[in-house]
Image 1: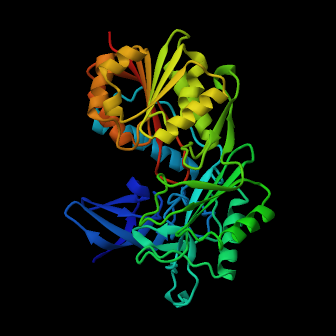
Image 2 (image 1 turned 90 degrees about the vertical axis):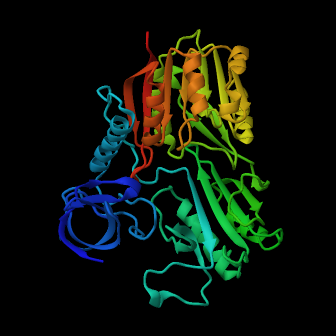
Image 3 (image 1 turned 30 degrees about the vertical axis):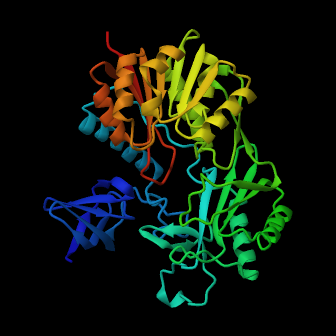
Length: 466
């Protein structure tokens, strides 16, 4: 493959890559910053694009900063860590605008400046680590056929290789200390890592969650029902880390790491942790119970800002019936419940709806109803007739966006306003185009939930046309 010399990196691109253009060819390069001038060694070349890596730096961009993480460039996360945060926000704002204008033909004159994250490190409230017999070493000389294995993150595109993590800047302490203690105990007591290729071994995953109230949940996933080797490790964690308020384990004998269909066993403490969020516009604070399988926005502080923007753009009335589609555990629904007459939440995952109902009762709301089921099948004309026509709809679908039947039903129901929250501006743009026959885009509010990554959340206010 050819070497491209003294190429200027033009922009940040998709999947955390940066973009250069050479003689009409678009070249994607990881771990570089717009403004860098580099030599690029190509390793993939197609008709209209290529992929390569920077092998020599001639000039460093003024947007470049020193990475904090010792694993930067190897670990698959935080790919923008060498880019200044201001430059990251500019790139994310541009990403939203480009997707909406190019894919959705959206008028972006109502776009506001992106809301950056107050904390750009140690902002996550959940991390999932994997055990593997296959430790990844950048230097082949470090590899030892007899080594214990690794506890850390999977190397991108190598499903069986795990990078041993020594220090991660995504979650506050004692997250790193807990992970290190688990690793050291497992090595000392010869607890085998799981081999995902031949499905042997004992330790599979470690999940660590925390809240702003100082609650910590630790879940250890093992590969068989022999708990006699696990319980001493859990005793060690309980004694060494009194911060852990929920200590749990899962037995996973399946050939994949998903645990949504598995029983969670509480070993010590509570079977949940608790989070608090300030209410909207002076309303009372909200208290959420978070179970091991519960979804909760991973950046707690930014979740507060995200929901506040939703409330602002929704402009709710006390007489309104509000539908919250893809409600999850009802966090947005409950944040808005004090502002309206009735809230109707719909979500596919039954456990999430159980959490939503629990949290509604915990916060004293009797104006909320939650339904579990496939959105395209639940949201029908009969359902709307039974629950009341929505005055306002908040929709926060997964990355794939909304099903076409859901969009059709929204057009039929014709609420006066739709507030569309999305973690994928590309599919959001597609859906906005389908809604354009009856709705016009007003305000647009990007929010950065994940510093140092390419991911961006975006909120769009849609107003029913007269």
